[in-house]
Image (tube, rainbow, N blue to C red; front, side, top):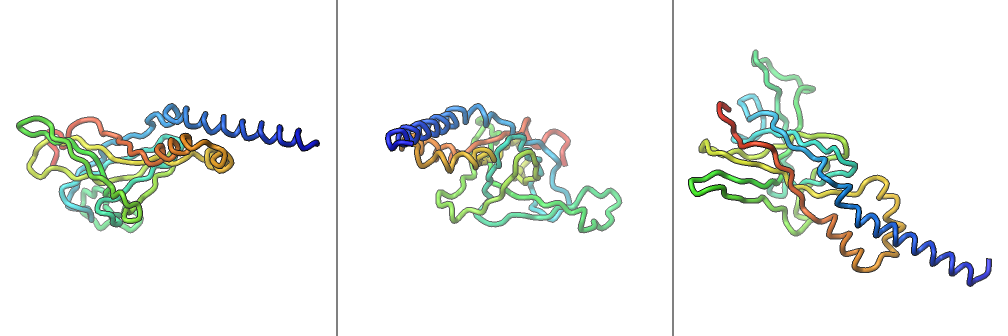
Length: 207
């Protein structure tokens, strides 16, 4: 192949890679349409080994991308909890379940209305403690509950990673992307998302 033809072929390949990269960026919002859900499992009881005044929620990742969550206080908050045991027998090790207290967003009911507050991860990524939730899996997280009987709405804060096919394509595309596209890609990965549980907690009659 002549040098001119080689250069022309190289330009075509680079152009295709740029088109693919831009296509990924433009389709990101559609492909990450919330396939993430947060549902109540139960409230903390005396037969748990976790924090008081919390509730356990099932966080389900139905997307093709991993989720990255930060743990409260920049420390490892993993704790084992026991199942609900009616006869109070001792739980076997295999029955213990791992849970994590992760950063969340909250809305508390007050006499003046709803008051919003957020547990923000540190801007210094090295000072955060992380836990991953792989695609099409679920985990149990702990979120604090009010101690005065008031109502609270809760959400989990997370970031999204790249899908498996993107891990194969992006390393080839990134070197050829323009600066604006690289910045947009970086913003996508660093953006914080919230998934809210339905309802106010605790509901009437909860222990």
